[in-house]
Image (cartoon, rainbow over all chains, first blue to last red; front, top):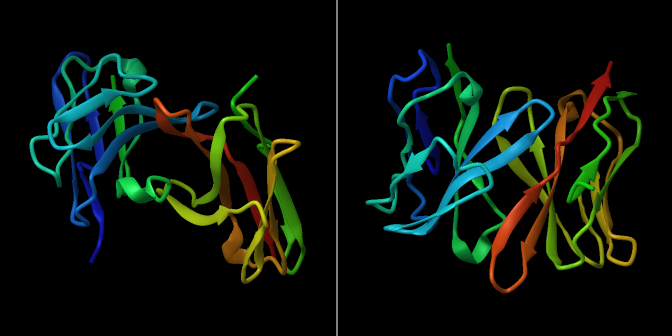
Length: 113
Length: 112
């Protein structure tokens, strides 16, 4: 089954404790992206990658890191989480030729206390 | 002014009703347009693309008005299962940068 998977789905952590949210897709997509979704602010792009070893900042990259060592994986790293990073996070992927057709993972609900 | 604006709703309609949403965009360099659907606490999913000539998919019709810079989504014969948030998305490609601009969404509740 074609899908984007994220883990964990839910996470409660404390300020400053490093965490990684994994994202994996099995559709051979070149493009992968991380978004956060907050009430009243909608979906905002954090980072994106157009291919292996190529990553770029989105609209809200501060406090986040990513890597793209393999085509299928695009982990999101929070080195020192803060309460303002409490949010719903989505990973998405697509073919570059069909950039608009983003396939989203199920989301990770992160709470930082 | 936001790049993509939608009426947040909620739109409360009875089953069988026809409902329409509009979305306006500010950047005339916008290349292509889409509607996504997002169920409560779930991931967004592509509903349909919006073409200049308009397009229809079953009970759903999407239209684009480039002169006035808005797109619309019409849902006929609403079903309970249509209850969701509908996100307007604009693909901006200015030659140097390509990105999707997301609206905040319009909430629809179809009532029995």
